[in-house]
Length: 134
Picture 1 (tube, rainbow, N blue to C red):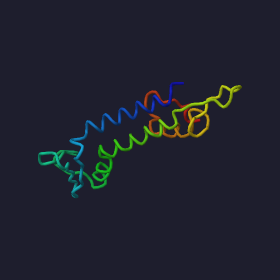
Picture 2: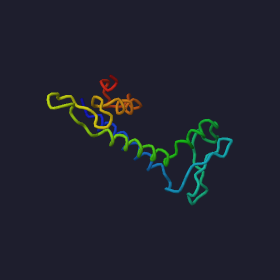
Picture 3: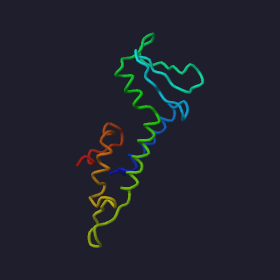
Picture 4: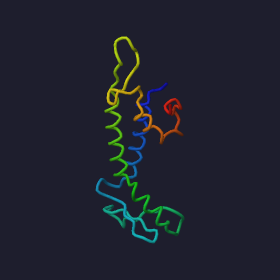
C-alpha cells in the first residue's frame, strides 16, 4: 500500500500549483456582476476575463460557483488540509508486543479514518487505493 499521506500531499501540491497559476495577484479577487459577468479586480487592465461560450455570458449559478472557488480560497483550504495531515502524520505502536501502527493524533489504526476520509474526493485519481475506504 502506498502512503496515504504522500498521496494527499501530491493532490494538495497540484491544487496549490493550479490556484497560484490562476491568480492574477495576491490582492485580486473575482466578482460576479450579474448577467453572466465575471471580473477580476485590481488587474491593471479592464479586469474582465472570458468563461463560457464565445460572445455570451454564463449562467448566474456557474458564475457564483467560480467566484466561490477563487484561488485565494483554494489556497486557504489547501493550507488547512496540510495542517490536518501534519497533525495525523505521527505514528506510534500500540505497545511493545504489538506491531499495530496507530495514528498519533486520534489513536485509531493507521492510516486513520480522518486521513481516509480526506482522500475520498480523490478516489478517481491515479494512485488512490480502495483499501483506504475500509
